[in-house]
Length: 252
Image (cartoon, rainbow, N blue to C red; front, top):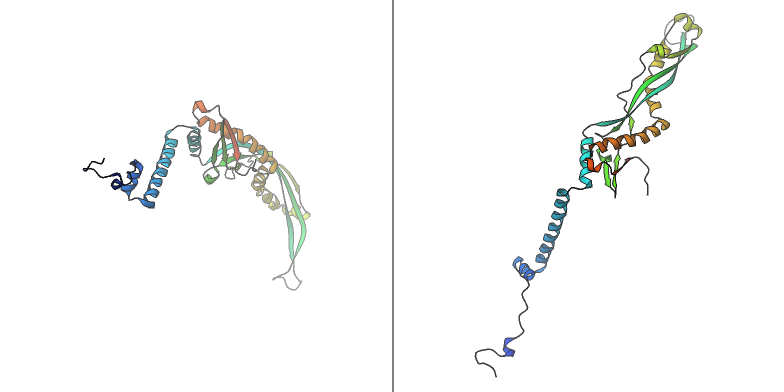
């Protein structure tokens, strides 16, 4: 029997759905597609903030190596090797005369080579330095964390052409001069001066040869690794540290 003060089951209709908090939130936001998108965006932002700030606040291997590289890059370049270079340079200068017709003692004529003076110099103990440039090659500097350490990529070593020391003690320089008959008479030193002017370029060229650079590149890996290791916290110095050059061939 139905109580007259209450509606019948038919009059009551379908029962109300249970209230869900997230639906209530969406309802407050306005509901529909906009509300769903806003909720998803809020979740994504929260995840990103958590990951980013948690990564920066939590000490780990990446901040350690980047801190060391930052200190390393305070210098514009790293000196990684010094070498003595001996070079042999040659120069040849012709002795020429102008021949004109007998009745025309001036104006254009014919240049005739009367002889040629050749000079060869053996110049020992020139000094070059090899550096790893940093200031102009920031994009080549990278660090990758591995399971037991790091792989650090840097610009490759090169000759520092601003600090080439050419032999200044000319008593150490061996000379071979082949003078022509005219030069024996006039004693011109043009050929020797020309040879001396090519010494510096010859030293840089020899120091930059494939053979010389192969040795420097391999030895510099260990040198730079020790520089970086000295900037790491003591508890991280035993970790593996591999140095690669930005022009090294790609490895699988």
